[in-house]
Length: 182
Ligand code: HEM
Ligand code: HEM
Image 1 (tube, rainbow, N blue to C red):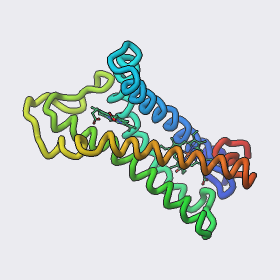
Image 2 (tube, rainbow, N blue to C red):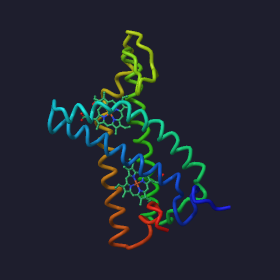
Image 3 (spheres, helix red, strand yellow):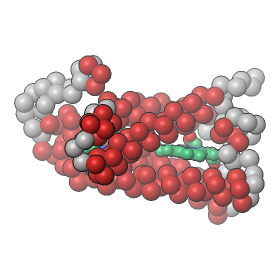
Image 4 (cartoon, protein in one colour):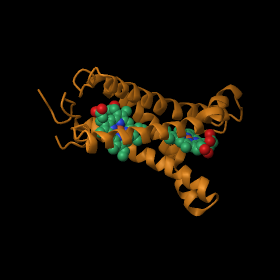
């Protein structure tokens, strides 16, 4: 049985597409907020955008777990990449995107836990306020949350450039199978 919700070898299904574009929008919000913070510093727009950084990042953490599990469940039926060098580079590139999408919020949440200040995104208490700092839980995010987040952004720029190449240079169906026009 084929369903528009599931992936098939010639296009991504609705679930995959919703996760891909919904998460792309949330990532755009995260990066735009941090870019605004760097450009404008303390400013009402920074407060507005960065004020939601932790809760939106927590939602992204949840979504990446769902997306990974969903991707594995669709693995054998989603559009395959050819065994060529470019095809294998695409698979490796996507794997790297997944690794960074997982790492960046994971270490940030570990830091929230280790801060001992408590954490309640959208008013939902995830971590209690213990008043006790746990240094080894702060270290990974302090050293690499921002750096690897910007690395993720660089990789996304490369990802989008490759899609542009597929669409306007090679003129194939790569973009269409993620937009649902197939
Ligand atoms: C998953 C998506 C996330 C992305 C793409 C992201 C991205 C970023 C970026 C680009 C910065 C700026 C680094 C700089 O100043 O150059 C940053 C900083 C920060 N983020 Fe995130 N973040 C995410 C999730 C989270 C989560 C889940 C939390 C906490 C619950 C969090 C907490 C922070 C904090 C406290 C800072 C300022 C300190 C630092 O740079 O480490 N972020 N983030
Ligand atoms: C304007 C922005 C974007 C465009 C036009 C775009 C386009 C696409 C297209 C056409 C595919 C299918 C490629 C294929 O079948 O080989 C794809 C897959 C993928 N994209 Fe994007 N993308 C964008 C943003 C992002 C962002 C922000 C992320 C992650 C941070 C991302 C992560 C992925 C991943 C992991 C895949 C593999 C399929 C999956 O597991 O979802 N993309 N993208």
